[in-house]
Length: 434
Image (cartoon, rainbow, N blue to C red; front, side):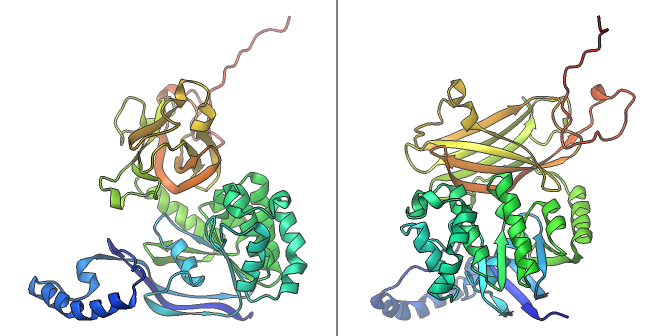
């Protein structure tokens, strides 16, 4: 039996909703706080509150009671719904955030690709960031130099390697970040949603490289919503649900259990955030509502093959004069991308009015999907917000879920689900050959 590279015992990670991160404090602030704190605690007790932060803020456990052993050479897939704790687990393993309870033992150097931009200094060039990341991993300069050409070739950014990475597109950023993480020979490689960005050829290269890493005796932990990729790449899968382990075993078996549970759950065709501080987004944009519905109808109604469907997002701009576009990616319940549609593709006509130079305010961006397109199945929607036509500034996985039902008008003598992820209605004609 191969040695253990990751050992996790009773791991827990807790967050306090509404609690802000502590900012830097000067010496005078610390001295003042030491005098004020006792009186503040007495005030909380007199008002009937406990003295701890948990009484003032709602707490949520992103991870709880996680106990795992992962061995050398294993390729382990982490699956689960949004908010299940997948990314939090990798962040704890990468030492980006500390656990609230439990312990972790890591036997070897850890390389990670958690999200676009993590671990890169925007002011440094691609070349400098390669050496910086290698140094963080404890590698010597000559070790990094031996891998340098291979990293640059894999990332396909040769022409821009001496350009500050703040000028890179999100795709260039991701390619270089993955190349660095995968080629600097860490004993443990942690990858979070590398398939969410990038074209098909790059995704294939990533999976191939991760396979090489696992075959060389190193450990790979891979988070993805693409269940097919998990089944093809990983020997083992771990299913997280509400921060706890729901299943752990062979990848095919766990994936099947997960998909069955997902199929029985209700769909989520509308999501509303009435309070800005709880709404998803960033310093540029706040997402206030997402919806998918039959055109000219209310959300929550059934959707069928033969209906025109409207999908949209209500958003609030937080900065002036922004040039924004929105992309919806439709995905099957197994993670296969069906199609994508973007407001960028509509530029040049009346559809682009209001997209460029948006002032502060609330807006709605929506598109119409023609009837006779989807199959009888469940689908997920991924949202990507793009600035200046090429910079992805916000991504939301599993933004919506919806189900397309069978339509009697489409039925003839054939019953059962049609083959394929979509079922478009094409024009046919049959006529004699003259």
